[in-house]
Image (cartoon, rainbow, N blue to C red; front, side, top):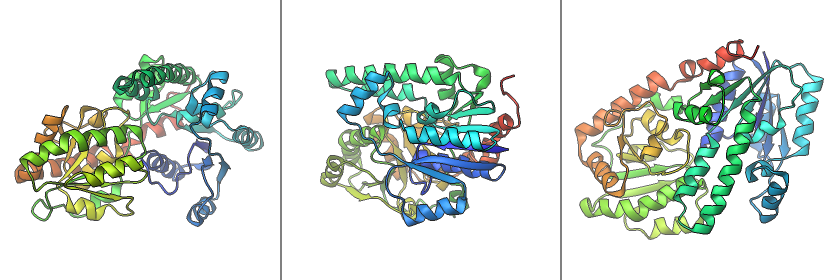
Length: 399
């Protein structure tokens, strides 16, 4: 089949949860179909990105970098669309999509993320597919519920209502919609999506992590690792809570415990908080996480909002590094608490769970082995992306 693939981000390098998922789906599709990619570029292409576009041979970009400014917020209200949609609105992209669909014959349009749904022409007669990286309205609702400032909470709740309305309006335009988890699928059904059009394409970890030798409890240090995108608000809020409320409790029990924070995009205040907290090492962006995985005994996911499934958790499980997560951080995963990871709902229980994995060799080994086994059985593309093959072959399309 010939597939037009629309993405809000250039999926190379795949260095965030969203771009990793996009790159994974794109690679899977390109092995089976003729795929052309149209996407935004937020800044000038690096030599590596330009090389990737040339190698792919069918990737075109449109420059767009519109910020979260008061002016764009006003424009979004005037147009009756969420701020995120306004920030990703481009007449050049709309014209390019229309031109490609007019000049070339495509069997399907794959829209990667709700931000690009606005570019699906209403007259397209082929198969239309939407991949929802998250149930967006769920993330906004949770953010509003967590916000302590009454004014900000009111503004976020208003945006949640706008996101919810917009997200509901686009679902019916697609023959097939893919959620990242059963939880997100249920949320989209509650939003009005037709269940028979909804399938699950889970987030997948880096499969090469399974090929590496098993980690060792004895060889590791009493180190807790956090490795993720530090510009994403749910990550920032969760990490701040762990630094302020959980880690001090843990250090009272295990003074030798240390916490390593890695990832790109950290706001300056968060980096300062990490650096001035006793026992914390802030390393920032890293190209290769392997030395961090080998050094640590525990991976933590402290997010208390957001949605979808956490790719960083799946990567840690694939590498065999035991995980302690909040209920939100473990949401959507086919993981059993106590068998594949530990789940903690408050500061006291998280400090206790992390402390156990820093100290108990037997529990550590069980979770390490079971986590890798879970990834092998549930989170490899050949099995997990089967629903995509079914839809592209015609199953489940509208009559």
